[in-house]
Image (cartoon, rainbow, N blue to C red):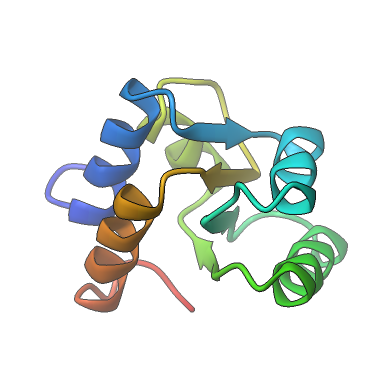
Length: 107
């Protein structure tokens, strides 16, 4: 996480209470259109990746395959997390900008 602006911004979003983590909560955030960005861990199962990519396309939310589940969870102050949503538009934009300017996370 050191030096990774995207994960630092994700940590800031978590401290601001603008994160939903775990499959069920992220699905609910997508369904009520509060999810502004979804990150799926690169070590998630292929079915999980496919499911959330499709849901993000359906609900028109940006989706990125990110770091492994341990680092994704650690960045929000939790145990390992496979999927995380950012619910604040401004913070989501900053995370996306950081991802786009970095090679650490995949699209």
